[in-house]
Image 1 (cartoon, rainbow, N blue to C red):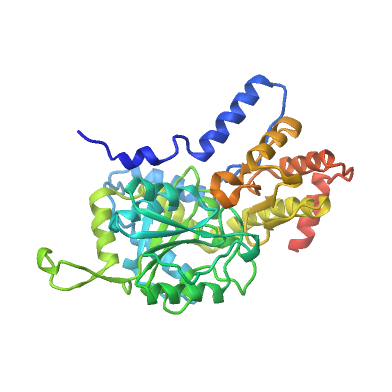
Image 2 (image 1 turned 120 degrees about the horizontal axis):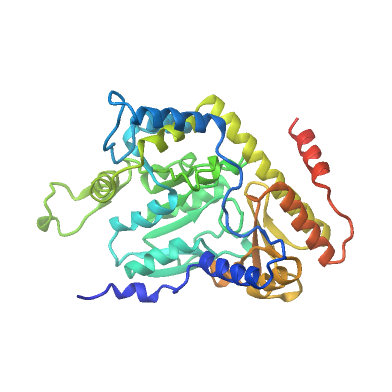
Length: 424
């Protein structure tokens, strides 16, 4: 027996596991301290009523002989896929039903999609980056090239003169930086991918947070993208499914790849649809998302469901504004916070990322995410999330203001009233 020794090249501890350990150790030593967590991107609001009603109904169906469901289709039930196709259509994007694949979350598919690609492909990943992109390719033994995302390019890097890659990871709105690519910038990447026979793996998990109508919510808003891009979406942040688990991936039929060694393969053409390969992979390694969960997901895309989840999204947007306004008040430079639930701030006074993490935890009992955990370019930066409780977010920002010598405090009730007026 031999190991896949590539796993030994992955950091022993996942970023958020390391954060949890540090926070738990501090909490055990300081049980009287109220710790406010603005680090991990988990939601705090419950599932909306439309989803809960659909889940209850589906549970009842599973308890009756005439409506019981066993194994479902690995690609997802048509009733949910149809809703997703309609959702894209509202954004003027036309999809076919069998281009939509329902999954247990974008994280799974982002990692599993690499099954389709040879280990000799060169992977291009912007730095800083969501760790899953990097770790899954290290596990497969691929060569990884990093693209500099930094303050100078607004953390939205474009292909450089010597850029050469086969697989490209893009995330917009970005985790962790909150930055968003424009249509013109995405067109540059699509053109590059088409010219170089590369594939773009596009993470659109936070698309619902885009408020600027001029910014794309899907890469398929760009001409030619269906010939070079796979898009990953999630209901985790959109509808609070972090614990319920459901997402979807779009694999266009127009995305085709030439194959080598044709005589050794059991195929008649030297061009293969990625869509068919993904079907084959999923039917072999995945048994589908539970029927009950898919009925809940279907409710997300109803008129009532959309109205209810947007109320939750606006709640988180209000939290982001509280954090962003605090950064403005105390003079800390940051990115994101408008079309994204994340605020990516520059650590003050030249602090390192983990140094600032310890400083906030020990002095004001507030937890964020050290930027260094997202790559070399994340050093000196820090991520705060808007997914917390509103009162806790306001309290955390008041603690931060006091720490930096600003006495003005925001009242939770006042902030809530201002947010209500803004929405009206």
